[in-house]
Length: 354
Image 1 (tube, rainbow, N blue to C red):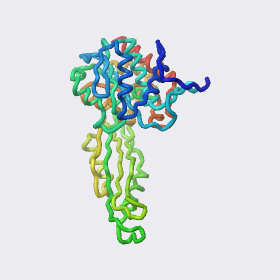
Image 2 (cartoon, rainbow, N blue to C red):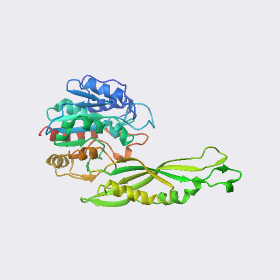
Image 3 (tube, rainbow, N blue to C red):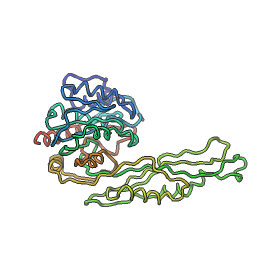
Image 4 (spheres, rainbow, N blue to C red):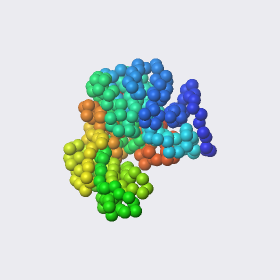
């Protein structure tokens, strides 16, 4: 099959791939999700709809229902604009993370209705936790806490991913003393002071932790750095962001203590953002059936997802959706078209029986 560039329109009876192309063609970088919210509301207008900020809830929350959840935002554009089919894959920003999951959600809600389901299309997942709109939705629609289970349609490599890591971002600062770059001995270079710390961080290896027989790899990474005011001034301050993904057998306090110890060389250590982990749990009969029908592979979630927010509410939840986690947040993001069918068929089979 050759390369096909898809226009931003929707056929009368769209296929899964046409729905995904339509979603990809609606820009929705974090902070700009209103257009996709409105498009979803127009398409799903036969169901009961609740608009909360830039997010949309489809169906009435109620006891015993199953929540289908997916975020509508993407990371910033890093490749070509719009959707494109080449061979057996659809390319475009968000194709894997996670508009493929949104496409499956839409078709499930259209085909099965909302008598037993409620769909949450929420904004702000790719930014800081403070901007994640799933939390305000769960707070406002208190009936959601009586749901039987939740499924977050993040990409899962044709597996079912249980639990998730917690995440912490810390601001780490090394201080110095500014001086003229022609006379550096009159100052203290904050950037070079951080050298031993950066070298050590560069060599930090992932730490494997087994939780309920599943491997979670803890990782610590320097993700941003800024220092200096001019090319001829010795920098007096060097600020870094350190990102820590921790296993769900650690509490948040334990994780912060561990990260603080790793960053003990710094002059300033301050938590900028945090998100809780979710302990892996596949005891719910719905999840066991879903794993069996979809191929039987259960793995840990290497990363953070909103199963954590559902778990904090007391709603058992898993990750299950089309796409490859290795392609998330990368230029040239794509999804296999038959991944959409795999996820839809497994979910439709299980959810039609509840």
